[in-house]
Every structure is written in structure tokens, then in C-alpha cells.
Amino acid sequence: MTSSPIVTVFGSLHYDIAVFGPDRPRKGETVTGTSWHPKFGGKGGNQAVSAARAGISTSMIGAVADDDFGRFLIANLKSKNVDHTFVRRDASQSTGMSVAIFDADGDYGAVIVSGSNLTLGEHDITAAHDLLSRTTILVLQNEIPDAANVAAAKAVRQAGGRVLINAAPARILSDDLQPLIDIIVVNAIEAEMLAGVPVVETLDGALDAALKLVNFFPEVVVTAGGAGVAYANRAGDKIVVEAVKVKVESTHGAGDQFIGVLAAEIASGKATIAALHKANTEAGKFVGTPEADRI
Image (cartoon, rainbow, N blue to C red; front, side, top):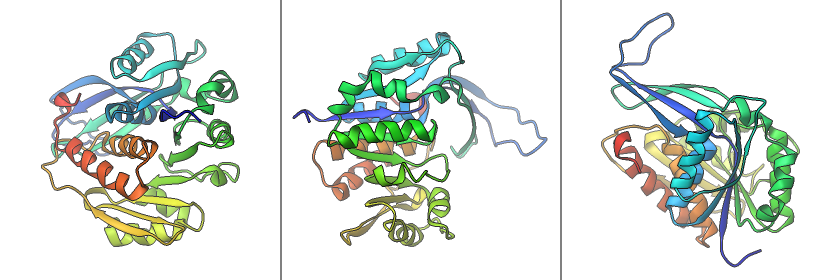
């Protein structure tokens, strides 16, 4: 392992189209919006930018098409100081994209089309072997194939690195992937699927879920929306951290901001609980910052 910490994010890149209106449409309803704009996205891409912004050396492994969307995403990675050497151009698919519809309160709903993200696999791990062998902490999500996550996690664990997964969107993790995970971060919906029991989106509910999930994962973080986050590990440590109280401008990308800072802090040598406090604070600042002012 290198003495200089590295966060590697293996995952999704999306060209996001953000649409703003008074409310999100119900089934069959048309709502008149106020504005829209394109933005850099994908859980993987957002988390990489967040980690790099936190001051850690950050690399992205992903896939885009050779199209305008793909060029936009790569240009943004470069401008945010994320190494994009292993972002592959794939001519067989379109670049992944999403449409997110925001209401007046800053909440949103989104639809993603994965495109080139679904081509990620063993070939990308082989190409990035040297990087993965030097990676301090690998960040994964559920927007790419499970088999790709397994291959990346194996490579990093074999070299002595750690694996953090943001298990979103919700899906059951394979028996191959589960034992390779050091730290899992989930929200109430994802925790409910993995724990197999109802989870209430409160700090008490989040902590209960975390304590159940430590039977399957060494360290567990469960986010509880505007209430805050809970943490538990197999050593018996547990903590809840209340969310920073701010005027909500937009919740879009707040979870990814949290993940990126958490990974950066852990990679730099901070204990998970200390990293959790820092990530919680930075996510609060992010939620309170208008989208147009986010760097």
C-alpha cells in the first residue's frame, strides 16, 4: 500500500437533467415547471467529486459513451481534480443519464437510464489493477452490475485496502459481495430490505437497523433523512448524530456528499465515528446551499 492515501470510486456516471417546479407530478398529471439545467451526476461521479473536494487523492473508474454527454462528464471530473484515467469510452451504449424533478421544498424524484454504466466489469478491474492495488478505500454503489462490484472489491481487499459500499438503489447484495464489505451505508428503505424488518426513519429506528445489520457487516451507517445518522460496529460501538439544522435548498446529491467526505476522512486515517461527524456536517452545509452555488 502507498503511504499517500487514495480513494477510488468504482461506479456510475450520469448526465443529469434537473427540472424545477412547484411540485412533482402525480400519475397522469402535467406540472408547469420554472426552469431546468444539465448537471454532472451519477452516485459514483458525485461521490468522487465529494471525496476530491475533501482534499484526498481521488480516482474514478467508470464508463461513458463517446458522445456529448460523456465528454461533459469527463470534463467535469477533470475540473474537480478527479483522476479519470480509467473512465472508459464505450461505443456500444449511450452515456448514462437521469431526469430529476424538484419541488418547491427542494425534495425530488428521479428516473435513471444506466446506459454505459452496465458495461462495467472484469475488464475495467484488469485495466486499473495498479490503481486498485494502491487504493486505501474503495467506494461502491448499486448503480452498476453486482459482478463488477465483486471483482473490484476482491482486487482491493487482496491488496490490503478497505471497501465501503453505499448500497443504493436498494437491492439484495450477493453472497459473493457481502463478505468483501468493510463499511455499508444505507438509508431506511435500503436497511429495511437488507435487515428484513421494518425500519422507521428516526434516529432510534436507524440505530435499531444498524444493530441488526452488524450481524452481516463489520461497520454500518444508517441515514435517517433530516433526523441524522446512526452507526454501529461489531466491537459494540454505537452512536447517533443529529442532522445539522439548516434551511433546505435542495436534498439532491446530499447523500453522495456524505459518502465522499466519509470515505476521504477514513482514508486519511480518521476513525469512522470521527469521520461520521465530519461527513454529517458537510452534508448539512450541502443541503443548505442552493444548487447554483455548489462548486
